[in-house]
Image (cartoon, rainbow, N blue to C red; front, side, top):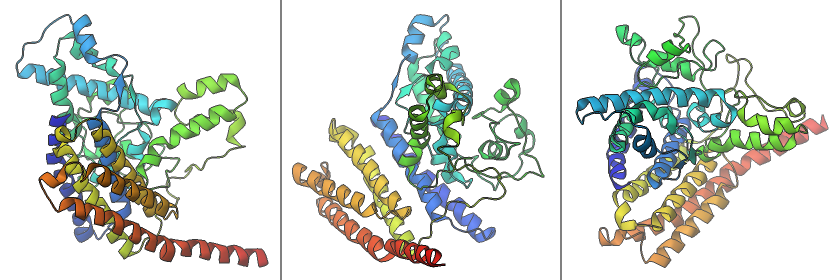
Length: 430
């Protein structure tokens, strides 16, 4: 946990810097709009995912250690080969986990967040799941277990394998020559993120594209079919916590509403998107039928609000960095209190991004809890020992954050309701 936290404290500013460089490149050289809210939603999703991983908020029904102990038929010597085997085994496992996540209703919930952005850029690579609490797919690491690859090797290689999937989330690298036949490239992964009928559920490989070619799921990027990104049932929110559970909530609702007991049971394991026949018409769900003609989710936001959301995002970055740097001293159960508080921060300011008037309620609740934590502990999780002024600054931030959010809700977002009421009144009169 502590080692992973230290790795993330190095990786986070690098990822943030690369995301911003890509955005600035597109802005200056391609004259493309700087879509702040989509980018911040993606990077905020990254906060939730890495905190969940650091806290270990998931269990495996079948552990890798168990497979190595009971099923290993050979012991690979601890050389460079053991790391190569581990990397290939993780990639093989990743392909099948990824493919099943696209093909089975229940498993799609864990992966929908990654596809939810209607843009394709380095930021969307950070949209990762928090909705998986039970890992059912350890069995796909069986090849490594049979060869006796130590679990510590898997734990070392796994973050490298994950980070190596970051770079190809971009539209600015077109084709890469002979590498297109060996590794996953931006062209391959653009296909994977597209909702065009020609591209749906293709290119599930993570590092080596060979798996898609072996198992029949490969699709090249077609020159006359530009990829359109997102999911066919749009998320229509910037809140990553909501996105993580949207599909699961729909499955729960459909399972409850259908009168067919067989459908109540099989809905979880049917192909992704399947719904019982007796709920489709009665409870319609918006779906994109024409990928070339639909309105992307983009609630209006003033420059002032965008600046404030940046302040919220960067303040959260500081709090998360302190958390990862001091996991040992914060200790349990305080690490779970801290992690839960970060989730509340994320929920609150992304609701403001969505122009939800209830954002003020969530922000007020979050800041009251923050001030109570400071009062109960005497400072902010031991930070005064290193920075004597920091607790005062954090408390002031909580108070200021409430006031600023109140300003946006009362003098900006409430205008939406007034405009809608006037429009409705004019329609009714006509």
